[in-house]
Image (cartoon, rainbow, N blue to C red; front, side, top):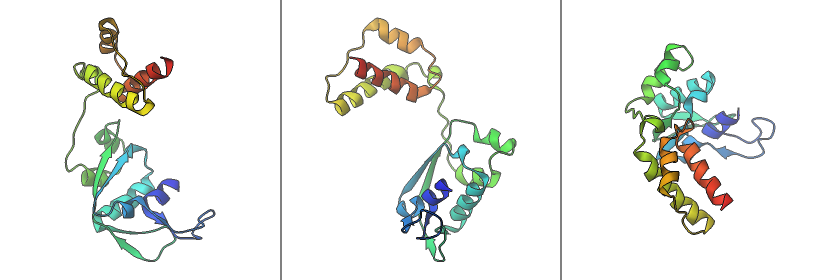
Length: 169
């Protein structure tokens, strides 16, 4: 219910706690791009409503009677193979085909070892700016260890390690 309200919005009084009208993300992103992360986690009922909104370029807020028309692009991300989820019946095939106009498959970090130093230096810059601290130095031995690690949590894990280094120094 929370995701549905976030995507489509709701009218005042449409459910307990709906004390005012809320514009959903589809409405807010009108004339732009809406990024949906981990779309595979979406329930089939929300998938159905999202598909309808994609096909008609319109929707109604929860509890609403007014049709809202939108013009937006969708950018979605998922850690799991959506095609596999479609095959197993866990993700709607029609929504998958609607969303997969252009697919970019990014291999896991363990298969992109050359990217690791670049990502580390990017994270160092990001956290030094956020924390108003001097940039950390990474010695050769530490860099080799970081590059040789498999990073099962991918870039999120790598950023977490760099942030931890900032906190601990």
